[in-house]
Image 1 (spheres, helix red, strand yellow):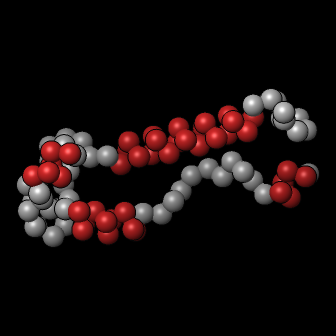
Image 2 (cartoon, rainbow, N blue to C red):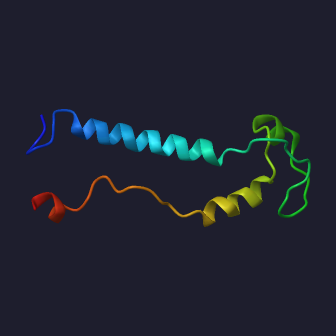
Length: 87
């Protein structure tokens, strides 16, 4: 049951859209193209298991962990603030 002017199922629609956005962003970050034998960042050899699991990978696990730590979350805030919902 929706509140106010929101149609029934509006909350689930927001959840579905958020999940779709997250999946799209994750797919966009996945490596594609020709992979590398050595890491682009540090030059160490990328393990065969990692290259097999992620075709197109160009970084070793430690360097990818550093890259992932630097990534900032960006997206759409669908929740809004309570103040904006009360207006």
